[in-house]
Length: 306
Ligand code: 0X9
Ligand code: ZN
Image (cartoon, rainbow, N blue to C red; front, side, top):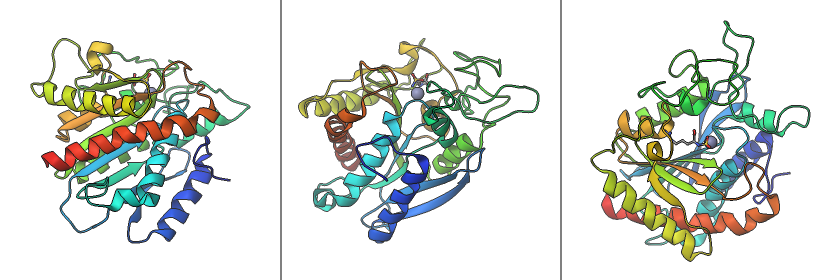
């Protein structure tokens, strides 16, 4: 059964989303996006106090890398708090003047492969098969069509980590995220892609560390404020810098959101320092609420600016 402070299966997540949408019909809508390569349902969770308003949109996705289990757990915790915490609906709360779009698990095939005891806990990529190769999977976070494959990628389909795919958006999963961004580009003001591990909050550019976007100071300031909020809640601070100064890698969703969809604030958030990919499940109840305070800070700043 689904438990908000556990690592849930994709199937249990879908049940949770369905029951949440049934329970809070005025607050939550599920948009069917299509299916993953192996046929798993992909749904965007839209949470809005006033769905018809012209609110700025905060778009969160998680779990593009199969083994990074903490990321979808955080995304679902956001759904949980936004729907059940009365403070979220109050004036100045997270839902006041802001719409939340959450895609809790971008790569369900890779996630389930990583969960299966007969496969590989460290699986990162999708589970697609492209005809020319005997190997499986593409690194979803090298597959986006902005400066695709110019740095930090492998062209070898058998590379376990960073194969960029045969072409940009070769994966159904990354195409779905692209469509969410492009369909909502006008109103989308913040994009956060949740990953793990190492506690980093990084912003464009990711494809290069040689230079920064001209708006980098605003990106940097917001990230530091979010990090401070998490620290005030008892969590570890984030290391804040541009993704490319950490290490250059092209074809990431953050660069696409910022460079192609024109989302003014775009981040990759790497949760949890210290445990690599196997974060202890029993610590989720401590850290998820701490990170949530960072998302409150994001929402407050987006509301104030847009
Ligand atoms: O390499 C990645 O895709 C991300 N780190 S992870 O360890 N979770 O794989 C960082 C991506 C940062 N953004 C870009 N380089 N565009
Ligand atoms: Zn990752």
